[in-house]
Length: 86
Image 1 (cartoon, rainbow, N blue to C red):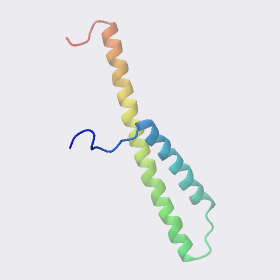
Image 2 (image 1 turned 180 degrees about the vertical axis):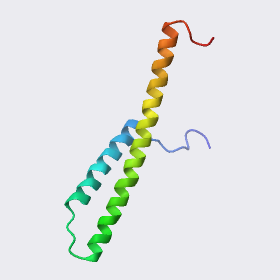
Image 3 (image 1 turned 90 degrees about the vertical axis):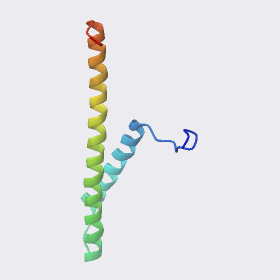
Image 4 (image 1 turned 30 degrees about the vertical axis):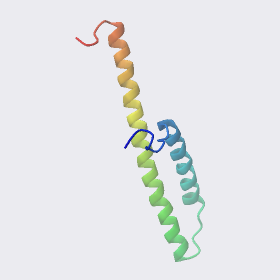
């Protein structure tokens, strides 16, 4: 598959923005949901599960981003001190 055939992959910051929006929406649904019947409770439970999943994905992406930023920072420090590629 050539690079022209590959779908556009959104930037990590864009994905983090989507996940932040999903977290807020799911949290609002969980907090404000009133339980009138069993079916509403099932829907609320699904929102809670969705919230947990999105929170995990967000955490992982943030962790990956933080690690990449720390690695880049360390490389700059090593280069400044003349320690790079010894």
